[in-house]
Amino acid sequence: MSGNHEGSLETALKIVDAAADAGADAVKLQTYTADSMTLDIDHPDFVINNTDSLWYGRRIYDLYEEAHTPWEWHEPIFKRARERGIECFSSPFSNDAVDFLVDLGAPALKIASLESVDLDLIAYAASSKLPLIISTGLAEQFEIDEAISAAREGGCEELVILKCTSSYPTDPSESHLRTIADMRDRFEVEVGLSDHTLGIGVPLAAIAYGAVIVEKHVTLSRNDGGVDSAFSLEPNELKALVEESDRAHRSVGEVRYGPTPGESGALLRRRSLYFVEDIPEGTVITREHVRSIRPNNGLAPKHLEVVLGSRVTMDVERGTPVKWQHVEDEGRKK
Image (cartoon, rainbow, N blue to C red; front, side, top):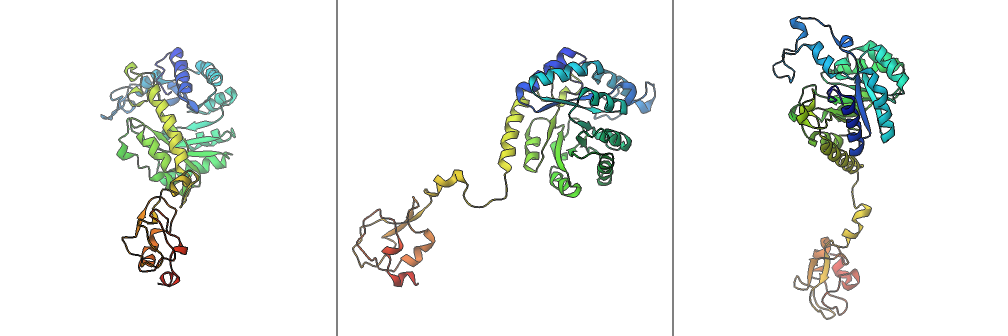
């Protein structure tokens, strides 16, 4: 949800409803105050100076003051989510936010990308014994290692990390989804994707690389102008993501060769060898007599050279599948 509630509890609840209607598994909030994130100060260090940013020129404090989800809203939002049959959890940005979310009955906690270097916060969140999700935008390998170690040492037993690129919106070419499989092997944890690209193509590709969680920002309408709306999905797009993610996840399957149960009927439509002329017993079989055609009731096409030049052992009619009993033993010995 992030700050796409636009300062309205009613809008926040509508986003929960939209997520539930779309079939999402969970909705995630952010639990902070502007004072817990930064200082209310007029100084160049506390102004967003990246000219590519959606929020260029804004004071950091003012942005967080606008985007934060008031703590008194959390309980009704959690309640609405439970009523709609989906999970609700949040990203804490301070120890007191961790305590607050634990008391609310949050089923998990998420550490945001820019907090993945705050090892004290990670350890404190881990001490809650709740499952943790750690986003890794900007993080080097050693920083991910440190974050995982802090979580494990803090008592976390259920942990997922998210591949993330912390640019808003993200150019798909900077997503580097091949890293997902490497992260899973390197850090020995399950891996998901926190995605800030436009559309749903990138998260679907991530599932093919093994992502087990997809996180996307959602807004009721990009035209509403919420702080993150420019790179957020609208409800119909979220529904498409949910449906296609399910298909993508089921399609990954396992390493497998040969026909699946669903292909059993197709086996009969393979080619095989058939007599295409009436032939009397004793005739030497030539290419005019036998062809590789569908269906698959005769010998495999690879046996054609063995069959050719052999004598047929009985009278055969056009449309008879070639079997070994039709071919003299000498032919089979070629």
